[in-house]
Length: 227
Ligand code: DC
Image (cartoon, rainbow, N blue to C red; front, side):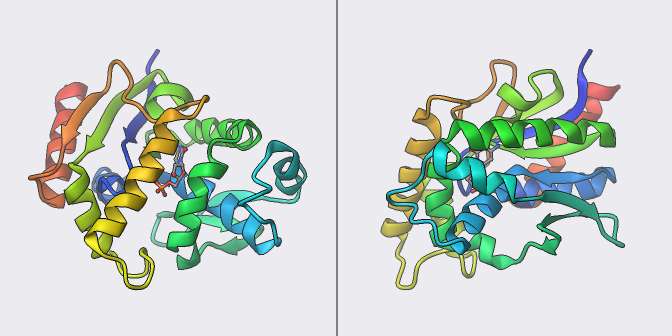
């Protein structure tokens, strides 16, 4: 039986988070951003003094994960917010340093296994929008709806550049495009749960679409699928 999940996967800076959040709000269902969970683990490792250039290994992360608690709590507005050891996540998760290292952290089997169990647990919430890289392929292969959002590398670099605080000082369209290409390469070539569309996902190229048009399109497809 299909799981009550709307899976939205896709490469870095494809607009997934914005679209997934708005879609969930429109449908009145929880939205879970799984990229933030990888970012939170990365931030936690950096804050614990881990040198991620030399010590990004399962052996280093296993004890770290034993001291980490990640949970999504529902706030008064009804949306779910990520708490890291009891503290609400903040925009330090969005820093370019965290983004760059998170692709390496996300390749570790210990990290992916630890998150897989937790992410699957969200099915207990009923219908949810869940966004990431492997939701339709690994976390919920039986999701009721699966979308893979893409846009050209140029358009994704442009979108990332206008997101305040998400690029290094002095970043240019070229440097952002390079950083995104590096992350895409790491995400799509790793041994476990690589970034790729599920065989039964609908790929949506958003290069020429506005955010609202994309949300309208997905909501329409979901309505069609339910009727
Ligand atoms: O979507 P994002 O940029 O916040 O994701 C941060 C990193 O986490 C990204 O480089 C890939 C990884 N990730 C993943 O491997 N699997 C997911 N389901 C979500 C994110």
